[in-house]
Image (tube, rainbow, N blue to C red; front, top):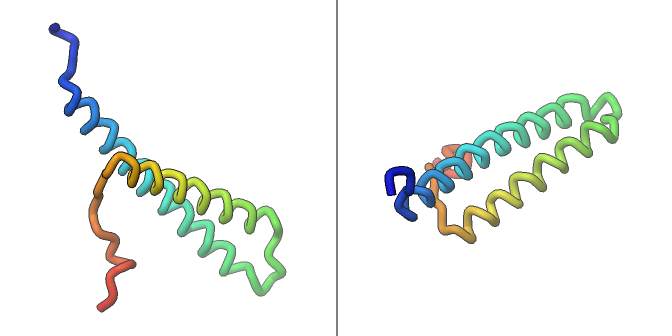
Length: 82
């Protein structure tokens, strides 16, 4: 009993880890998109495009996983219109 965690504590830790991973992947995806845009005029390589697409797919997978577990994070200021 000493080492057992209540189910809600394990879920809470899982949810927080999922949110942290989503935020990290979203940042990586945004960076990949910015890099792709920055070199677009210089005939963007397929590697940059592939990397941006991979980051997008990672983000969307994690987002669907978060929806499955009903995990809610902080609102992204970039999404909110002023």
